[in-house]
Image (cartoon, rainbow, N blue to C red; front, side, top):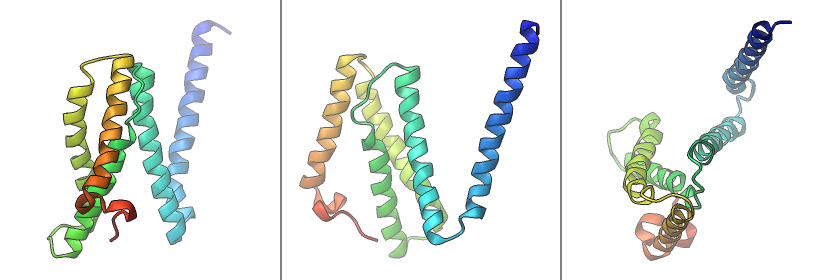
Length: 154
């Protein structure tokens, strides 16, 4: 087989494989339609997004981050605060709550990323570690926002 045909065949196999994954992801909510199944699929999707973002940072940029959970955690806290406000009377559709949490987390990432990406290598890793520790310490100091040791409820 010539090299070009081999490359085309491999490209076709790769596209077929990724198409199968996409089809499985589209059919998964139809197969697991219980409340537990939907919740589990949501959590799996969130974990996939966090892992992909870390893969971009480490795999493409070569930057080791020890504070990566800060951004996903802050998005969850902001989404929970938004949900509590919506149940208290804010005129916002419930389907937009994850968007509110995501946008708030993006704003935090822009601020902290602007500070931490000025350095690379070990300095970047230590800055992200420090940011993670700062947010962890803030969780105990600011119980009004983080809910203290018990967390938030809604």
